[in-house]
Amino acid sequence: MKSSAQNRIRSISYAKYGYYFILPFFIVYLIFQLVPLINTFRLSVYGNGNLAQDYVGLKNFAVLLFGGANRTESALHRDVFNDLFNTLILWFGNFIPQLGLSLLLAVWFTDINLKIKGKTFFKVVMYLPNIVTAASVAALFLMLFSKTKYGPINSYLIDHGFIDESSPIDFVRAKWQSRGVIMFAQTWMWFGNTMIMLMSAIMGISKSLFEAADIDGANSRQVFTKITLPLLRPMVIYTLVTSMIGGLQMWDLPYLYKEGTAWNKNTETIAVFIYNKFHIIPQNYGYSAAASVILFVITSILGCVCFAMNVDKDDKKKKALAKEQKKLAKLQSKSSFGGF
Amino acid sequence: MNNTNDNYTRKVMIKSIVIMAVLVLITIIVLAPIYILFVNATRDPQAITNHPLSFIPGTSFIRNIKETINLNKIGKISYSAWIGYRNSFFITVSATALCIFFSALTAYGLVIYDFKLSTPAYTFILAVMMVPVQVTSVGFVQFMGKLKLTDTYWPLIVPAIAAPAIVFYMRQYMKANFPTEIVEAARIDGSGELSTFVRIAIPMLKPAVGVQAIFVFIANWNNFYTPSMILISREFKQYTMPMMVESILSNDKLSDQGVRYCAIVLSILPIIVIYCFLSRLIVDNVAEGGVKE
Image (cartoon, rainbow over all chains, first blue to last red; front, side, top):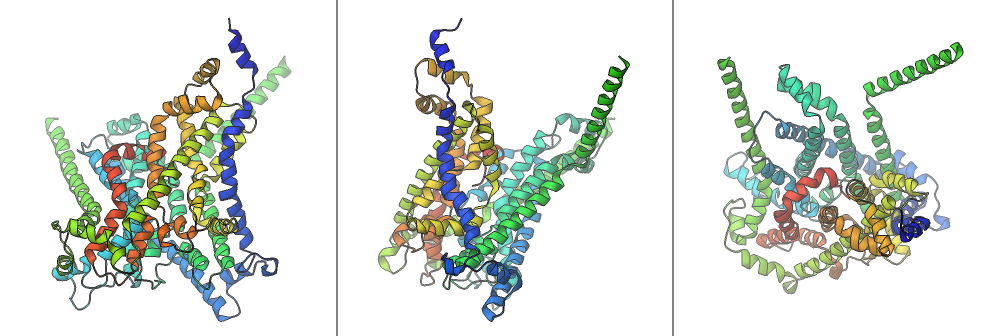
């Protein structure tokens, strides 16, 4: 028996409150993210500004992708490709060691046979760099790897006789040294995060699989290649995609890790290009927006490729099998009907 | 039998020792830069010049801090820890509060109410979760300029209301842990819809709200890109803490190394303090809720 109050409440439709509650999110999203995204696409077909007479069509893209008639335009074209290349190099250089290291650590931490003491301590320590401000990390590494003999790293190398006092290593401007430092800093910041993500994925794998492998006498390498890795694939792909989206946007470190105000062309990423074209005179919104759109397209394509790779072959087979069975069942039911 | 068993145990033991050694080595590599930073912040500038790398803390910490805080008074150097802290705390706290409140509200709206656009709205939120910031930043700043909002804090705080990843997490949490009957009970007792959310749902969602608040706070404190995009005129009075660090960094007139290290320490101090107290909670929730913004 329901009370009258309950009945009254049942009869009121509360659907409108749902709209009220989600409205702020969508209004703010519209103004601060959706309109800006569309605006970026719009700006990419204009020159520096957005007046009707500034409309240039696809010229910005043509200049950035294929170069142009005059010197400045071909310089821009060279810069964009240089920066895209740097972005990829820096991302590869940090993602591969990062994934290798975090995979190894995650497997160790989740191994039931090994009794590692202080797991939480190690996890806490290894995650620490991830929460430190990226700008401060850049500042710190710039000071540690200072190119003069007064830099801590250089002074250490000199004191221990690895290099001569008169020729300290130029970690800030030299091509591979500066890239190396940024890759290291990036790995240092992110491997703890990746490790924890992978650990939770491994712990999601059913324990009975590992036990069964143990009973069958599989060694740890077999367990890793035959059980952990295949079942971990979705998580690895997820990490790959998120890291890639993050890596393509890499800005704080490459932007700050430089000598005073002198730009280092060896570590300039595409995000730095976008920022500089927008802020540094002679600024040009058009090129900046066009580069953003190119970045957007690259990100989307790579993301789609990764997710397409993620569709498991076994899964496909299973689906095909299920379809076949359904067909059979249908046929059977039809024939049984016919018999009836 | 006994022999093979022994053999096995020994193998595991050797492996454990090797792994332990590797883990300790990694720990040292991870902590070394931060340790050197803190050590150098306590050392006399002259000592740093003589021996740039040292693992023994000095005694000049108070002196360095004083010098750092008084920096803008002695020269043309645009650095002030107070202004940086004030601005960063203001932006971070308001953005975090807005982000958490409205994300919870949006998730609540999606979970509790049965309305036509509920599923499409959720699908939309999932779809836009991964659109990177840098891609939209040009259009964002230009549009904000049109609205006369550049060089103000509005574009740094208000967008926090729409955080798809946080909504996603809150919704998952609510689906699993929030008994919807309680809403109906509140209605019978005559509670309004919004007050049910504020007075009943939010307290019940405390664990999720707390964890997300920490992550959002850290992400906002560390944000350097958006402030440097939006604050076009580079008004010193508006600098956030990471911008203060940049300003110190690009100034080659500042020769006092102790002050430089100290400035970096000050910029990460709040985060480190939070981490000291809440590291367990943070690390345990990275996998589920630690979504980067």
